[in-house]
Length: 180
Image (cartoon, rainbow, N blue to C red; front, side, top):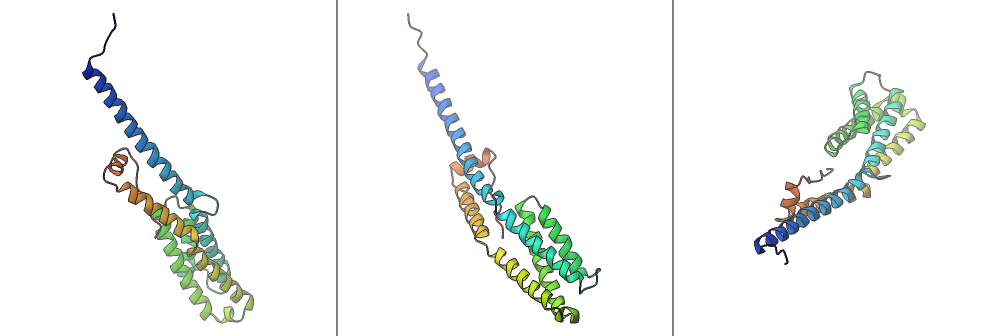
């Protein structure tokens, strides 16, 4: 005598397996896609490194500026403070605001230096400022920044998809923050 499962129980088991496969597949697929975007952030010479280099350029400028500006100069202190915070920041949203603060302080200190008489007499410091400014600006325009933003935007667009994106969001997958 064969034991046969009722048809309704078989349909219920099949539906549970399909639901599990759909949920697990959605979650793991979006998790892997998010990991690829996060890799652009943390890989060697990724976005974190680029921002760390920009912070280092700001801190290097502060060393030069200390030779010509008072140690209590507000712009100089802001450049050092924001540069250190940028090097220690842990999330993209903080990077954006801190990087903008470093850029503003960098520009302010550069302008103050160019007006300073002792700085105008130092050819070495003028060349160093030119080199730091070029490096600082080229890092902002780096392909890494554009690649991260493009990958994050594409991921976020997939996460906005009506069915699978909503399901992934319910399963705890979050959008990638853009670096603006």
